[in-house]
Structure formats: structure tokens, C-alpha cells
Amino acid sequence: MGALDAVAARVAGGATVEFRPSGSSMVPLIRSRQPVRVAPVDPARLEPGDIVLARVAGTVYLHLVSAVDPARRRVQISNNRGRVNGWTGHDRVFGICVAVDGTPRPGATDKTTAPP
Image (cartoon, helix red, strand yellow):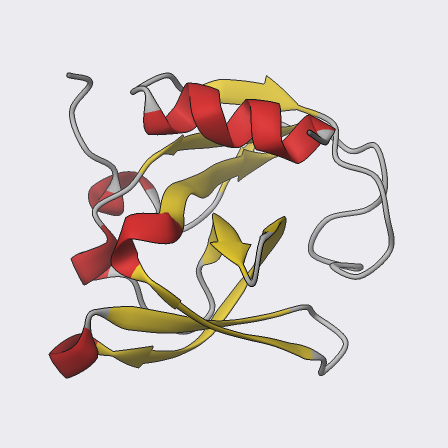
């Protein structure tokens, strides 16, 4: 189980989590080791451009929503460099990034869910 799997489990359980993801696939939106805050999300409210914590084909990513398919209750996940990871169901979208390095992400808080 990777570091993002543990974060995803906490967010799926209703926690808002701050952590420092590594990698360059989301530059310049998120730089490696930059602190982010992720909160539980209502996947039905997601829009392209939202940054979410989601499982796609067995791997957990903190990536962009690049397309939505409300009829099939799924979203397409991509990095910020043009690579599409694939489609995933609403049940595998755990949270939304509400802040990067302390700066709120516009509109993200409106898509969070109340803690259980």
C-alpha cells in the first residue's frame, strides 16, 4: 500500500488531510512536496479542472478531472501534462484538493461533503 492509499483511506473515512505529494505530473498547479489539503467530496458536483484524490485502474492519484459523465456517474482523470489516466466511478473519488500551499482552490470548498 502506497502513501496515497493511506491518505485516500483517511479521506474516504471523512477526514480532511494535509500532506505533501511528490512528483512533477501536476506542475505548475502542485509542485513536488508542496503541502496540499484534501477534503471528502461529493463527486456529483465535480467539474473539469478540479483536482481530486481518486483511484484509477488500481492506482491512487492526486490529479485533474478532465471530463465528467454524469449519466454513468464517472469522471476522467488526467495529469497536468496531457496524460489521461482513465475513467473512474464516483465511488473511487475520495476527495477534492481544497488548498495548495495554504492558498484555497477556487470553488473546491463548495464541493466538499460534511464529515460523517
